[in-house]
Length: 212
Image 1 (tube, rainbow, N blue to C red):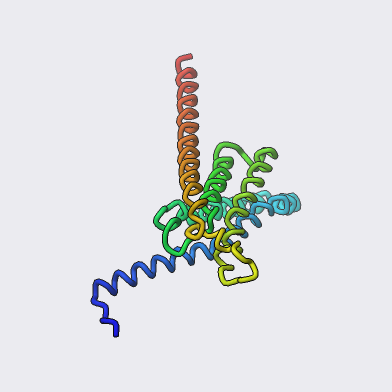
Image 2 (cartoon, one colour):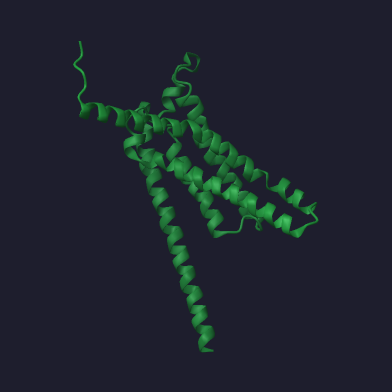
């Protein structure tokens, strides 16, 4: 008969179990967020057609600003929740996570970078690039989540579920994780340098205007 747990052991068990449940719950909910992110992104032509039929300018502005707020806010929330896949203690240990999830985070970060550095609503080329990156990122997450994490009890899929889960395919998961960490860091540094350079150019132009 097993000895009863003391207070410290019970607290540790509840904490570790709760943390694991939370991570797996976030991983399970993220496909819904990815789907809504794609829907809001590709509903832009419909929103524009609807705005053209509005006769009240104020109503059109409110509708457009509300759409942009929900669309970009959902993208940021999805990125924020997805960043748990960049934590080695969660991705490389425990029950495992979708094997290409860290790379999906990187591509989603690139999508956000396109939004920050270019005006995708007025630049068709930037909108196409953002759309391609968003589709690639969603595929990199949803496919291993559905056919890996959620299909581990499906014998008809053979070894495919194990290959799509990080802890079951460490030969691929470990280098993919560290490459994703490097790309994510380089992207963040690049965005920071771009904004610093832009601020310095704006200051130089302002100083030149004052001296003249």
